[in-house]
View 1 (cartoon, helix red, strand yellow):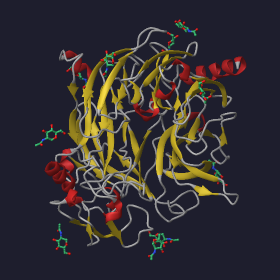
View 2 (view 1 turned 120 degrees about the horizontal axis):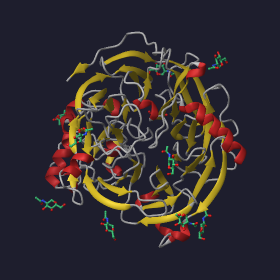
View 3 (view 1 turned 30 degrees about the vertical axis):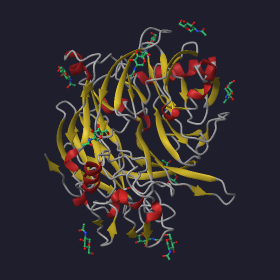
View 4 (view 1 turned 30 degrees about the horizontal axis):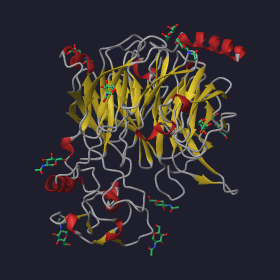
Length: 555
Ligand SMILES: *[C@@H]1O[C@H](CO)[C@@H](O)[C@H](O)[C@H]1NC(C)=O
Ligand SMILES: *[C@@H]1O[C@H](CO)[C@@H](O)[C@H](O)[C@H]1NC(C)=O
Ligand SMILES: *[C@@H]1O[C@H](CO)[C@@H](O)[C@H](O)[C@H]1NC(C)=O
Ligand SMILES: *[C@@H]1O[C@H](CO)[C@@H](O)[C@H](O)[C@H]1NC(C)=O
Ligand SMILES: *[C@@H]1O[C@H](CO)[C@@H](O)[C@H](O)[C@H]1NC(C)=O
Ligand SMILES: *[C@@H]1O[C@H](CO)[C@@H](O)[C@H](O)[C@H]1NC(C)=O
Ligand SMILES: *[C@@H]1O[C@H](CO)[C@@H](O)[C@H](O)[C@H]1NC(C)=O
Ligand SMILES: *[C@@H]1O[C@H](CO)[C@@H](O)[C@H](O)[C@H]1NC(C)=O
Ligand SMILES: *[C@@H]1O[C@H](CO)[C@@H](O)[C@H](O)[C@H]1NC(C)=O
Ligand SMILES: *[C@@H]1O[C@H](CO)[C@@H](O)[C@H](O)[C@H]1NC(C)=O
């Protein structure tokens, strides 16, 4: 351990000259969001990866085939499923890559499962590799110090590591990392390096990892520190503030947040009534806890060993995605305490006009599934097709749904109001059924809220109209007819811009100016844009992308 630490310090020292330091790390590539104002967004859509010039509002290239010339489809001939995508570079070897986890699961002859990570060379804007990793990779991280992409397999509960210098090699899983199968994340931070921590929603332990050796070094069972061991049955999101040198862990299933001293690996505090996705602001001076109840609670880190102090609450209407995107005027270095920052949150609100109408008539939330009848009420052309591509032929209008208007899908067949288990699927949804003007991005300027003397009281986020997204169909066959799956909406900072995807009024990428919080414009994309990565132009190596595709519209 001592040996690997001094080696990595050497690596870090060399790196400091090329990569500015950044403390508030979430996916590892945040450092590239501020170093260069010019660059392109990579948008991952149905069977296409599109390169978008945010300034000129133009798709400059559409990638439709992989490294072997095959279309970007899975075993069912549907689009590959795109999960986390991050940028990583090695200027010394002229490598500038975007890595993207593919969510599709494939089966080996022996029954074991696996998935892939796709690798794009951003200098030529082409897929140059596809690496086998553990099944169902969701989160992925750029470990810039090691020039490695760490892909978390939710089936294995482990990380699979791909080195930038050999994307053709089989990814190895982190040694001695015995976790249960389950969704998990990695806590990366320059100040913690070479250490990292990992979470798992199904396990009551904190895993400590030595990144350079790819080994688990510690495993801490935290249950004895809780008022009741059943209060935190696993950990989900995790963040770090170097002000206290504490990590903050979100308990899975909305069961609070706890604070952990990384200096001596000791428990600090448990916040049972503050729940949600944890995220340190640029400068680490505030830890945001984005609640599933749409409230952002602020924790103020104190000195080492001292518990953070709860501050105030900001309400974000419109069903915010929990991955915050920070923008601050600082373009050179994120490491300074930066109270002058804005937080953008992509809104996932369901803007289906029939749902809105029903919600108003029945006085219920549009995301409340209790007012609809059961899946058994739906009759499909083919019940074995997966939810979302089923064609609904008929439904039993129970008393709960009296007065609702049945929409006709673009397929000409009647549908329940394009919602839940009876939804026609994104590709078939009729844009006329959605009021996209109601939603987009929420933004919060914490400095302004504090200056307005609202500290200690509730404040409300503002909305920037930037298109709407379709709800995810519930994959659960026993789900209530109009209940939804978990909908995500991606947003990403790139230089001066904040980008977010939209399905309505059309499939597109919206581009917002971070400084003015105004929409710069939108760029129509291939159907179902999901994830976004940012590839900055670096040094004398601006990415090459042939000019083609349609231009967007300045708003
Ligand atoms: C896959 O789908 C495309 C249309 O999206 C079709 O042209 C092609 O023939 C299909 N391939 C196979 C192997 O079914
Ligand atoms: C990966 O291997 C293929 C041949 O199998 C080669 O053409 C390609 O250049 C390699 N890619 C990299 C980045 O090494
Ligand atoms: C993190 O905090 C420690 C202890 O105060 C300090 O030594 C270190 O320089 C800080 N790291 C960064 C990147 O500021
Ligand atoms: C953690 O400790 C508790 C209480 O001793 C025990 O019930 C539980 O099984 C332990 N969990 C793990 C993953 O070791
Ligand atoms: C949580 O509880 C503490 C004390 O029990 C209280 O001071 C704080 O306001 C509560 N926070 C929230 C968000 O309810
Ligand atoms: C860890 O460090 C903090 C701050 O110095 C101290 O208060 C605490 O007692 C230490 N915990 C252990 C278990 O050593
Ligand atoms: C709608 O429901 C809310 C509680 O969910 C209630 O406060 C309100 O009075 C209701 N409005 C009407 C018109 O029934
Ligand atoms: C129903 O859909 C499944 C999956 O797409 C397909 O395999 C099956 O052949 C279809 N059955 C009929 C009767 O169309
Ligand atoms: C759907 O189409 C049927 C005819 O097929 C029509 O009677 C009905 O009014 C349409 N519903 C809506 C909401 O447009
Ligand atoms: C946040 O609000 C403050 C006070 O109104 C203002 O001075 C500052 O420029 C705003 N910050 C950003 C990043 O817009």
